Length: 255
Length: 280
Image 1 (tube, rainbow over the protein chains, first blue to last red):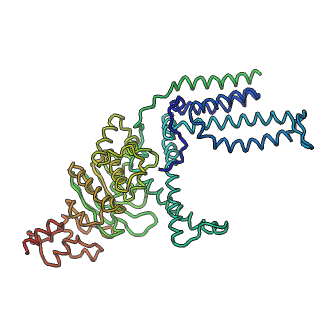
Image 2 (cartoon, each protein chain N blue to C red):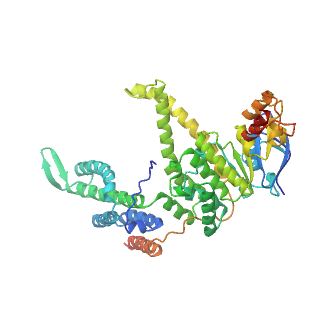
Image 3 (spheres, chains in turn green, red):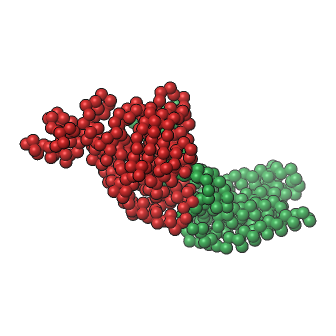
């Protein structure tokens, strides 16, 4: 079974943390560096996020994501170091090109924040089963319909992709060119995407009927097959994260 | 006790002129297995969906007459309410998978969660349904990894676990290979023996003749016959209305060999064997 879920099954304390707490962490990790606009705070929070990711034993799986992020950040670093409007103090000179201190630190702050945001999301995505996340949200009061949409995406999209593969094979076996020059590929696009869309639409109707007869729209309280998982101290974690956010806000106001 | 009562049911899909169901009336007793037969577009699936309330609640359209399932009138109930009384299994096993669950076990639980069945009872029911359909060993598998026959049995288990009074199977084997078909039919037979009221829409008339207590024959939305398989399949006007009698009946008809009752032709392999043995 192909899956588009990025979840990595490991034994770590992060895997035992409530998905909701991880969402709190994302909020905290984004808000705190914004409220304290200093390089040190941004760096500290980033280090905390990275340590957490490391403790979650998933850092190796996330390297490809960082590869892409670094590519973007390096361009930011170069451009800001050279052209940041507040640039005053030259640090280094290579022929005509001058590197400035202000721009460099500004770019560094941006980079820390970006890495921080990316890392806090990676913590959620790589250490949480999508089904657990949806179930926690539904228990917290998210509409079960919306929960269904999120949960089913993880399975139905791979199904659609394999349908796409089948249709491509079928069309190719009838002599359609699907590879080669751009113009050939463009021409192949419609005959491929048409059947995929149509069959998906038909499936949607049938699936709607099947859901309907299984009480999808039943009124009254739903129950859950899985017991509420015994997550690691969800209230304590959530309250302390809330406290951190609050302290940051208060500090910002009196500042 | 009557489990299903259909009285003068008429129905027209929105945007069409023709009646999909035209004055259909019949009754089903508790524990009976009814085979519903008829050529394509004769109204079989529409009738099935009228019993679970998808007609008219899902499709809308013009509706007349009455359908009563285990004492509740379909027109005045919601599909979810009726789902506690009557369950339906569709043709395509793939589109009946919810897609939001990661294991067979959780998939079967979907309906029960929606109906608010308590957790302990839920597990008991799921175990029972999975065992009955012979897929208990696959309970931890991903639903999309099952074969067609297994998937269809999972769809039946998902409905059975909701403990309806009546189960309707709308061509459950049309997309399955012979082995999958056999698996599903054995499961249906087991359900029927457990006392479940079953309505089975099926094109393979040999199967219907073998398993059904009664046959409901529809054509152009009208009831052509509602009787024992041997009486219905012995009729001379089957072909005229696009049905081919079971192969055993055709042979005996050609040989002019009637069953011992002198009125009907044999409809099953065993019946034909008896008659042919005597003829020899």
